[in-house]
Image (cartoon, rainbow over all chains, first blue to last red):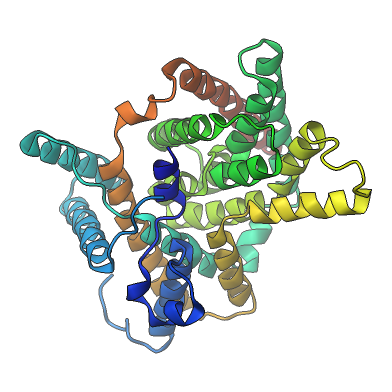
Length: 56
Length: 345
């Protein structure tokens, strides 16, 4: 059950994926943190006009 | 703890989910008269079933958590003051009333000896919109909380969420609910944010944005059921602790119960409220949000295995669903009654 809860709440990515994580000494990062970074990336891309003319 | 998935594997799994969502989108564009969210959910469930039959073993789980959180955080872009004001001054009263209703129904279930006291309290908290993260945070603060409650709450939330996701849009169409009514019903009554906003997304962009505002309010008010549980069940955790320290402890537990994506949603929402986005940017981000939800939904449908939902006691889970449906029907009646009263005036 612990596995199920963990996979739903806190499925994590390994530290080799992210140099910043290694610098911070963290093994993993929460999904929501990745999602937050992706969200601001998407916002920055939209604000810089990268999606202009892209049919979504 | 489960083994963390490799980034490349996550990317491939998200790409598979995206492909399923794109195929469903193409089908609806070609004239298939089924709501796209429903089509994505059931086509991915069907595909997973086919893979299971052909491979003669369960289909591997697909990662959907990041895309779901991405959609929820991007929903903050649509939190413009006019959408928040559309909820009305009575919005906190609706949430409080529903929390009281769920608490009363589960209290009655405890009195009828259907559930043990603490189990009933934690179930009421989870079902009233606070979700599993609040239940787990509260359990950490209550050393006497029964350990088997978390799986039961999880099963209850998954069953009520799946049932609500299928029933709410159908009932909404049958009763002719408008975007505001569906958002209020789904936003307040659905136990988890994900299914709640997906129900909104199946109706219209307006319903999706309003549901997002309702869920933000619910998440901000989840401290009430947490505080109520801790006050009732952990009366004397430390006899030397002052009332002030106890208050701090309850506040800390309440804050710890708020999922991380809610903080992200709130931050983007604040940025949005101070006119951080132009209308055309909002429009593009709204479409990206919908894609994130559809991609996540494909993963949710793929991973759903009805047999697993009942693994922790079919009868107890069925009772949770029945009690939840009582509350849901009462809320719907109140919403419809409120609309007819407004029309009368």
